[in-house]
Image (cartoon, rainbow, N blue to C red):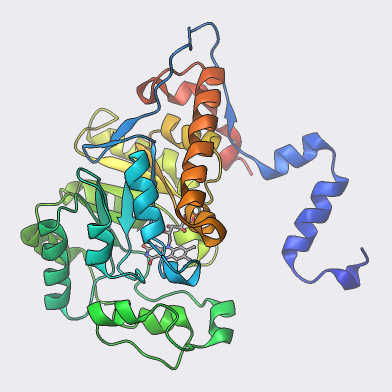
Amino acid sequence: PSLDEIVNLHDFEAIAKAILSPKAWAYYSSAIWFRPRILRDVSVVDWSTTILGQRSSLPVYISATALGKLGHPDGELNLTRAAGKHGVIQMIPTLASCAFDEIVDAAVPGQVQFLQLYVNRDREITRKYVQHAEKRGVKGLFITVDAPQLGRREKDMRMKFVGDSGVAKVQENQSGIRKDEGVARAISSFIDPSLSWKDIPWFRSITNMPIVLKGVATPEDALMAYDYGLAGIVLSNHGGRQLDTARSGVENLMEVVAALKTRGPWPNPKFEVFVDGGVRRASDVLKAIALGASAVGVGRAFMYSFCAYGQEGVEKAFEIIRDELMMNMRLLGARTIDELSPEMVDANALHSH
Ligand code: FNR
């Protein structure tokens, strides 16, 4: 195409890929390679693990994505039902378009769910919400800390807030919702930008659930989370939706794990590091775990899987990940999640450009 036909920078990427040699493209576009081990009897491989002490059939959990009903009439329940059938852990979003209790009621006995929390300016609303979740059996609290203000979602802003958009349930739970902006801004206007480390002891005082900070991006903050006695962190840039050009979770992983090792041996049973962002393949998952993560969050891929196919789409997504895990673990020479180690990846190129 001529330069006139280039509309945005993604267009350049597609063209670069088409004209570059495979070697040049691989160098530009990827940064972590596997170092597989051979002859290890991989007839039986097991990719199940524990996440915050809870059994999980996959080393992957469903990350919170708001407003599931924009994609399918059953919204978040597609995820709940598929997760219940497959032993996968779902993180319930504060901005779910189904009522919180509806999502918990859709779980089968023993099914593990976590709660993603946006903290309300009115702490009484937040206290009640968290304590209700704990009473209903939720097993972990993920406080989102990378969204004191929602990023400018430019496409969304052009749409404005029209009709219900599945927002009614959010309004029921969290007051202070505005209707004169895009959906993202409108439903997030209750979020408290004054949230700070000083609030952490309060959260610990209102719940016995393990508390994880979602959206940590530096070793400095990882160490603070550790020193505040929290149960873990999610290294994430919120799918690139918040601070423009923030580094991705996996890019921060090695530095963060190196910093945490100064506090004691790694992995540390008292503190878990999760990663999310752009995960579409079991190979992505295995690389993050080899570098020290205990599990990986997947948001968009699961959300997209229910848009056309409902619950069955989500189940298919789990099955694809499971099959890829089996194949990749065999080819890598890792029989269990515990056998994944930093020596199995070459991440030297990650910070060399
Ligand atoms: C999100 N994410 C998100 N995170 C959160 O803590 N609360 C939320 O309400 C939402 N909502 C949300 C909506 C949509 C449409 C997207 C794409 C993402 C962020 C999400 O949990 C995760 O951190 C990122 O999406 C990165 O993972 P994926 O999507 O690349 O797998």
